Amino acid sequence: MAKEIKYDQAVRESLLKGVNTLADAVRVTLGPKGRNVILEKSFGSPTVTKDGVTVAKEIEIEDRFENMGAQMVKEVASKTSDVAGDGTTTATVLAQSIYREGAKLVAAGHNPMELKRGIEKAVEVVVEELKKLSKPTKDQKEIAQV
Image (cartoon, rainbow, N blue to C red):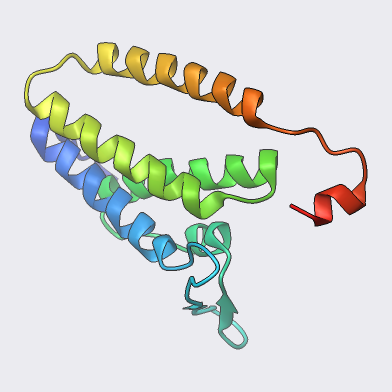
């Protein structure tokens, strides 16, 4: 099959559309008042879930470039689930926002690599601040109180 090649704004728009498609589907599960999502299965009965990473894993988009955008955010949800076990919906919504705002800046002429470095520096600062705020837990009872 021949490869389709896109450049500049056209590819950024397609990627953003995929990011938004996945993130908007996952977003509805956010928080204690989040809603359930029904997932169609190719076999058996549909699955009802409120788990962001489960919703993300089931999303496949027909357009290749939109699907690439969705896959990027799906990776964020999967890594968050693997590392933290929770927070996949929040991570997905944050990734959507970072990509959307970054795409605006790139369209306005900013250097994408400088933006990437800035995001990486910001992540380091946020992680350090979160470490300062965190309280280590010693046993299951303390974890249950969170």
